[in-house]
Image (cartoon, rainbow, N blue to C red):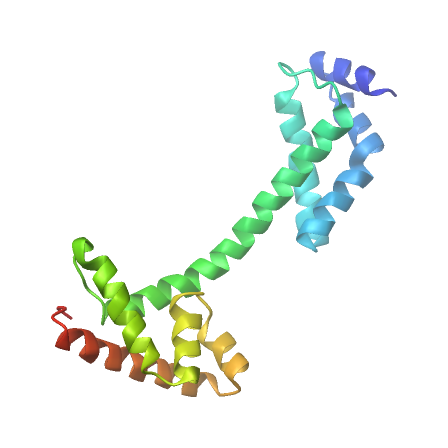
Length: 180
């Protein structure tokens, strides 16, 4: 079946359109999703979502290049799913890290540039490993376990070191007039 015939089935709201789309472009959609997600289960779900999105888009749209239209939807849905899967993990780690920092950093917004300078000065006074731990945890949002592996130490050791760095930072900022 040609693309224009499949599009006509969508306009007629004939469910055969989805089966024909799958026959013609299902493998390509799966390939695109698998390349992005590296998970067959997630890719299959994105391909199914692609057909639903195509069904809801035609009509009113009448794509000129149906293959590109379908593959673009599959790609966008796969990228969105990839971001969501990775954002959830990263946000949990980042939220925990920010909560840890709240114990030593409290500054009015009009002093934020000044605070950044003080933190930079503080980090320059720390060992290279402590700077790596601090930046990895509070700037890059790495988990304590990831940092421990990168630095060749136990997670408990990394956690204790981060606590000590935060305490030093709290004292450092307190001496410079920041309420902690």
